[in-house]
Image (spheres, rainbow, N blue to C red):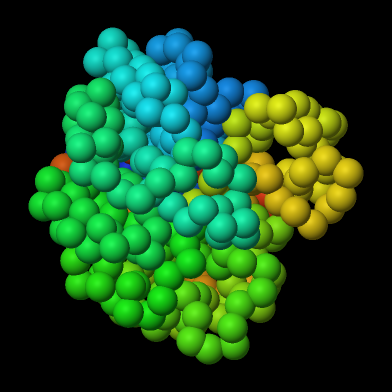
Length: 387
């Protein structure tokens, strides 16, 4: 298979040859500048490390099945996503263990799931119990970090848990983080009410990411110091950002990207299980939620209290360009190169020998997301769209 497109990193027109699931050749070719405008951009596919579900299905469900996992993971093809971390949020042990066990089984039983799942992200249950930083996580299941508890979850997951979000405010956090990192798990900080010293101790122990910085926080904070400033200034922490236009205002995105630097920023969708459903009201675990006409997902009856995200990672790419003034290459790398490096993986860079996990897209595009995916390719197979 051969693809002709504009490289996202250099804007040059190239011909990419794919054989046996890998890129075998990349040639720069002469092309009329007018015709080049009609060509799509080509880039390594997007990696979304925070996806809670899609289309009405949450990964945290105590009843989720292997086929439901497979359906959700494959639905992400249309957004140019070639790698995903199914994300389970705070819940009781039985529900969490069922979820991770089912995701692991889906990877074992279906090659297409295994090809897409980078690993499992567990967000909680070791998070702050206070309103605000706890977000929508159920209070009754929030708890201090417990190695025996986590080990049982990892056993149920058959070792697939690669990313864990916790609060560093607990006394047990530094020792727990150090042990998790030694076991090969990347530890992120989030949903916290932590002091400067607690954050520093967590990073010294090996924490390397701030989960959705600026969200999962108190509505009002002390001017300084506070845990947002502390994380923003800590060069050893990367930061994942939800740049859907709802979770973080333009000026905050701009400040975070400038302060953290683009090289330490990672874009995530933070898709809720309700993402992809029509505008309307829905019951979610006894709480009525609403998808508004602008795509905002809120607690029903008002417009400010968010209850998750519903925009794909491509909107984050388009928005971070518009909000923070970065170029296309930088924005795409925030959604691909950076998350893979965080997890200790080697990302592809459109070179011979790289796996043919690619996305072809239009940008700018006259769509609500500002980016239009033409095709998604995984291991050399076109899994969405056409080329």
